[in-house]
Image (cartoon, rainbow, N blue to C red):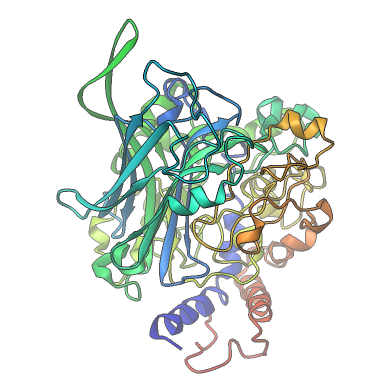
Amino acid sequence: MSRSHRSRRRVAGALATAGTIALTTALATFSAGSAGASSHREAPLIAADPAVDNTDVYAFVSPDKPDTVTFVANWFGLQEPNGGPTFYPWATDANYDIHIDNDGNAKSDVSYRLTVRTEDRRGNDTFLYNNGPIESLDDENLLFRQYYTVSVSKGGGWEKIGEGQVAPSNVGAASIPDYAPLRDQAITELPGGGQTYVGAAEDPFFADLRVFDLLYGGDLSETGQDTLAATNVNTWALQVPLTEVTANGDPERNPVIGTWSATERKTLQLSPGMATPTGPDVQVSRLGNPLVNEVVLPAGLKDAFNGLAPVKDATIPEVVDRVTDPEVARLLEGIYGLPAPATPRNDLVEIYLTGIAKNAPTLDGTAPPIQADLNSQVLNADADPAQFQPSEMLRLNTSVEPTKDPDRLGVLAGDLQGFPNGRRLGDDIIDISLQAVAGAAQTGTLVDALAAGDKVDANDVAFLDEFPYVALPGNRTAADGAAAGGDDKDGSGVTPSSSGGSESGSGSGSENATVDAAVRPAASSTDWSPMAVAAAGSLGGALLAGSVVALALRRRRGRVGPAGPQGPGAPPAMTG
């Protein structure tokens, strides 16, 4: 067994014993301000500029290459596949960035940048995107082409590390009979063992967006519809070795990273028939944890947050107040009569702004409410606690090994590699949030009225088991699926479904697969049973529940025994 794998087993074993259930219980409250859609059209200004609008960011240890981390950043959401003749190009006057903070000072230590240029062969001859079937990226029938450059910065200037051709929008079955070869040709190898993909993908976010209609109709009658089924996004998937993004290139000493995506573009000077970029680059969109700008922040702060640097987050009282006193909890109380948890929500401060650790800095000087070590940069051996700055970002402990059988509820179900320890494509944000808002994490029992969540438990099409993991973009619409009774008769991609689907692909043949509702994980109280054990919040209850989670994890990994994980280097049981 490699040294890095032994280190990950030690970390996983420690997390799965004492303190795990304290983490699990408190984590359910973390989304209490965020029961809604992800960041598709979340702010007034960016809604008018979808090409540079971040929709989701994912970060996870690559399941098939655990010595690497994969970032997936999406833009230009809610793409209806037939939206020609322009379709969905990347902006050529924008910087698409993925930032990594590995020491906790809320400033990027490693940044990756995507820029795009266009080659438009149509001129004044045609309005068509293509004038015949497209079988490869260099097919002469492809008239509108885009090319990308990926660069990296580690505290200085930008260095180009890769370039390739963008996989086009999925125009339709006649134009693109098989998208997979185009996807494969758009993947570029990067120095040191990394790779990147730029192009279209089926939107991996799954949810019933009718949360905005008085929280699912005011009576939970509006659930079960995957509103994002049959829609695509522009995707940038980036896989790099852990040594490239961890502090001092040492993932064993410094396994925790924080990440967010941002978009910069120049001011556009408008004139009849033209838009000319002028002046310096300006940040116009930003996304770390899902749902933050969407439903945590009020309308008056949304545009400002998109232009804000993380280092400023905790210094703005209006932003902090929306975390410590989330609006959605009060809305559930007003609409459904479900009592809102008591404020201030210092647990949310820890999760949103500091990461989870027993010694995580807090805004008011009190002890962190979640007494477990998971994903704060203060856990890195080489981090300077004096330089730590609370800030909103998606944090990932890369030493936690990928789960063989991922649970859609992530950490809540004892799956420590899931959200909010990073975010995998199949993590179900909405169901966690609904129960948390109603106080299930504090009482230890599910709220019966919300037990089924939004009834969308997984994506409508399967994800891939290998890079870039996202599903191929579809070229069928929701209307097509309804007319055809839900059948994907031409094999072109998406079959719209309101019943969800598989959380992981089964290889290269799974891109266009749909999954029967019968195989979806059912929402039940057994998913939340560890919380009931620690409902009283006592140390004894936390230790007992921690052992329950540890046993479940050992069974999942095939290492069942009364004394903890077995084998060389297995850690002793931790006590509080």
